[in-house]
Length: 351
Ligand code: ATP
Image (cartoon, rainbow, N blue to C red; front, top):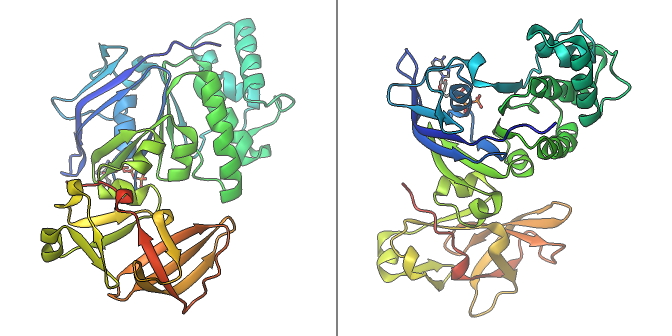
């Protein structure tokens, strides 16, 4: 089953609900043919609204445009757009068997029985449900239901697959194994897909690129690694991983240094005007106090298996979190010295 791969363009697309809620500010997004793009952000940031606009389930504000393979579909209803959807609830028909659920869309489109059987059989192999064809939805595990929902969504050969929090109903352990399975399946399908989630780990595992959303706006688009290393906005730095935020007063900014724990850290030129300095916990080095280190004390020590997290407080009472791989001899109450390499400060500007 090789689907047609199409690109999607979202151009100045906005949504204001009748009650005046501006759920989506004018957004622009280029989704490449065959890529899996995650819309990632906290609850209420507008992810589902954007997904529903792409699906054609909501009408966008005047001036918005959505293109599928360069064709303007903005005025087209959902059923004309050729999209398959998978929701958190799966929405399977409980009285139907696995194969009937998967073949449902084909049946209502009048696809002849023989062809329907062939397509359903292929999909059952693809999503690894062989042997469960005659089971009904209530007899399946959460993961199996999710695979049926996915197979059903792609059975009618949509041009685009839209997934709205498809793993949100599962417990943490199952979610983790299923997100890898879903990532694998989407690769095999090769279809252009948009995946909505508020879970950064899920977005990183499943998507080729992430569009991070905040308060109705797309803040940054990129692959996980570049967003983590080069967040364009403090929100992106905080949402993707943990980050220390060191606020500076104007006097320090003028001098181009960060004064911490009796020690001045030279600030890189391109960050001199930045109000707060951001640095990842793994970029904070912790050792014994020395004349050239920032003096601090360990307030809390948390063992996290592969690393140890230290909550520190500098002499100037600036809280700093450090994460050290493996183990560390430092305990609560110990005096430590922190080294900060200024090149590790993130260049994330407040909009
Ligand atoms: P969640 O992860 O909680 O689903 P989300 O990022 O998907 O959140 P949306 O569902 O897109 O967010 O909602 C964005 C904003 O629009 C929210 O403030 C929400 O309350 C509002 N909203 C959504 N649907 C409607 C509607 N039909 N009428 C009015 N406001 C709405």
